[in-house]
Length: 362
Image (cartoon, rainbow, N blue to C red; front, side, top):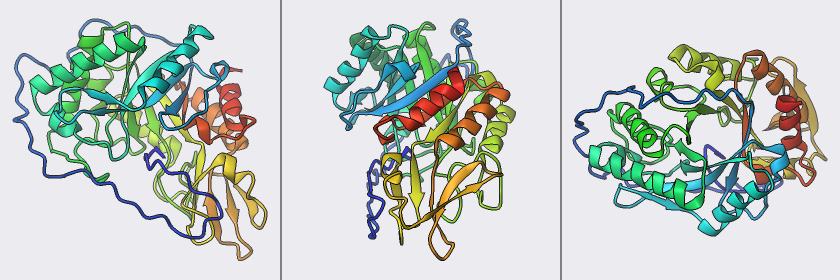
């Protein structure tokens, strides 16, 4: 999140590419992965079926902006991480987390979760590989939920069995992910929320098993491609090269996750072609930098894009119009709601967050 979690704000008219690499050590040792007395998918009591619609924002530890709870039902605070000893959680900027939790005084119904992970956040594979580490990690999740007055935990391991982001991985990760989720559910109880962020492709997860454990899933339906292709198309067009939102939703449902437990992710940033526009551009920067380019609309993919005087696609992104189409579609498909990465990327008027709220709740 950028989610693909490359947490960098780049200005639209920066004509140089910012290269960066934050790779985790891929040579960490693994546990045996053996467990006793645990059955994947075994549900520790019935999880409440909450059918209320969801409008969820990821709110980061490094931004200063306070979210407006009037346009939100849920906040995922980003991020916590697996600690260096693989048996607990570290939290970025605990003071800010406390201030976010204080928003519940304004809106008691607001749900606040700690999101653990993010792109390049490692040590998940080592932690999940042993029963002792899983239990200790889950117990620490319980401690944090109680200590900070949270409503639950969101897992953002990107991704089980994959080292794409530079983190360690193991072929047993998907199986161990199930066991980890089960352990956290046992620790925090059924009255707290347990959610996770999933890839647009739907790979890496055993949805059928996890559907019995988690409350809902946040689909990261963005970062699927770069110009000249869309990175968050609703439907497949000739400019949607990898995957579209409707295809992503179908993959999750086919894998065993019910539609009522799916929350569709929307990016509040765009991707530039690097030559003309920087790789990552927040929406609040896009709206001030349209001069010199022409905005186009893909009526199949239902997303906008910018072209230069040569007709070359230089930026793919979202606006209020495209968000309206996404919200209409996900409600037609009986999904639970929408989430977005991330709150502070919006403009000062709250154009995109208001569009999400209107599209889901009004």
